[in-house]
Image 1 (cartoon, rainbow, N blue to C red):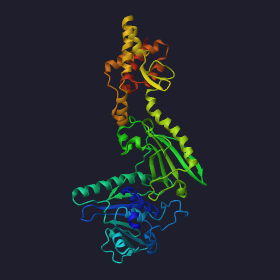
Image 2 (image 1 turned 60 degrees about the vertical axis):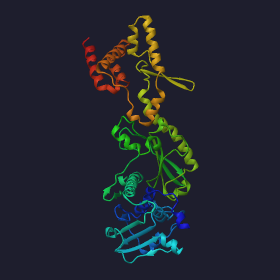
Image 3 (image 1 turned 180 degrees about the vertical axis):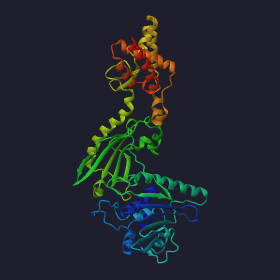
Image 4 (image 1 turned 120 degrees about the horizontal axis):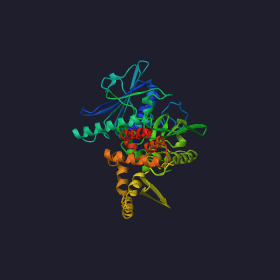
Length: 479
């Protein structure tokens, strides 16, 4: 009864593989290979590393459920937790677990067969002397460990090509998850040894959820919080607006999208534990979807953070939680600015924005700016009766903004939402009109040019606008 219950702790294939890889990294492996046999009548999956390997005594201890006290002090680079991971992760996916390990040229091999445990109703682990029938045993190097999953009753459901295709798809999805969970090890971050991870010969690439290398990513300073005599490091990141890098935008959204992937990313020993949550301290909102916070905690704080068996869940202690609440306010504002700055009104001149943002109490509305040089120039050339009608047209346009449709489109696919294209002759006309109005108000030509460069629609069409402005500046010089 216990062994069957242990299979349902809640592991997914992704978290189960990550738990086995934790052991490989702790054993100082530098190359970890995922080996999947998806074509044979009895598919199998293995994790092979080049770590230190185990003696027979250590292998016996490793095969024992609950082989390590979770309260005892661990080495800083030990990614283990309860001494349960090898067994519970494996049992969650298969009914037969075989572990072969080699150290100092000596090979040992042990196997758990859950059908035998159920038949005998005894905790009997089998040690093997004949290695010839063990899959992938020839791949084991001078030292290292090979973990083999067979009888994959939780992974391969049914027979036929559809079942195999689903199995392959799940393995590919798991590989993407591992690229995220171990991205700092795959990249070889300072302070940890670089690890190479392969899936059937294909090397997995690190996926940095903070897009740290992009010049438009806004990274905050590293903040340290003392907790129980140890330090938690926190750093905020605001990802780039989608127009900064349209090609990479979709990739860094992740499968769940930006809205679901915003929030805290908690690392234990630089291995990702949980991500995409605000721990109930804030809601996931559209305007904060670019906000992500990296939290680094040492493995000595597992009890304080309530790290679970799967190492896929965590809860910050109270005093850290209160600091995180204040951080949310700061980074949330930064994320919002990435979206709102594009329409922000210039403090130096109030006549350039086409749209004005008006706030009355709790209501926010937008209206067309009648003082914009283009509108003002056109209205000034109209007779009084038509001038009144023109202002009514502007008012009607402003009250007819399809707010619900805009919100729905921007929430779903912001990178696909854009303004209408403007004809070059229209753009040239409004450039000349705006520039003339700014000059008439006493603004220096160079200052007028910089003001226009910072506002729409000039900024989005700057290659055309700059050419026209340069011609106008030359004309000013000649005059």
